[in-house]
Length: 304
Image 1 (cartoon, rainbow, N blue to C red):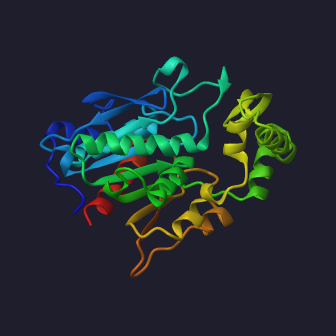
Image 2 (cartoon, rainbow, N blue to C red; image 1 turned 90 degrees about the horizontal axis):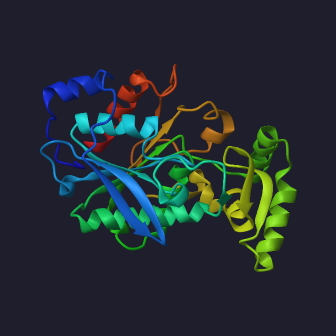
């Protein structure tokens, strides 16, 4: 059993499980100074538990943040079901503020900085008594938490399980096609320009007006652009999972792209496999029904 589960107060549990809670009950805002930046997170404790009983560390993908609808909804569900959780914002907003990073300003953050931030939060939890930590990553963050678990490092031995929501798959041809469909530009020439600058020691120079993580005309350093869009098998979750032996829950179907050959490359579950694979089909986005189903799926995985 991953954590010692203590029932929450009946009124709160009923409200959350029925999807009636208007906002997550916040126990405390967590801050972490890491690599010259202030990162933030929301720590929600289930009544009657300690951090030593276990914590789910939730990491949103892309430019997402701890206060997004999916993260807060999951924290409500976890609290009602007896689990502690910490939802983090892996990238600081402007001037270190919490919240989703906007499209303005110069984007200097890299794919790998989130991996390092996950390690810093795991160490933060360990210092506060957590010994059994479950990493939950959404989208791109699924690949990032999986790579952290494989890479290891300080406090990584505390990571007992992984939960991967719509995990990112990455192959260059598919990425280039999606990039052109989304932004109307060819990815190859942009990557070539970024590589030349990084190779010349100018990784901090800025590419102006390029598509980047949902921003149509962003200002991005060459190093940042290359880290997110350059070919690297460490960004492909199915490739990483070939070496994972921790119990891992894979949830497919949460987003429209979760279909066809991309998701078919993810592993199947079965006797002796560390993987549990579930498919959920949202009808109306991340509404109460989906959150209840996802919360129940995670609960059953954690108590096995």
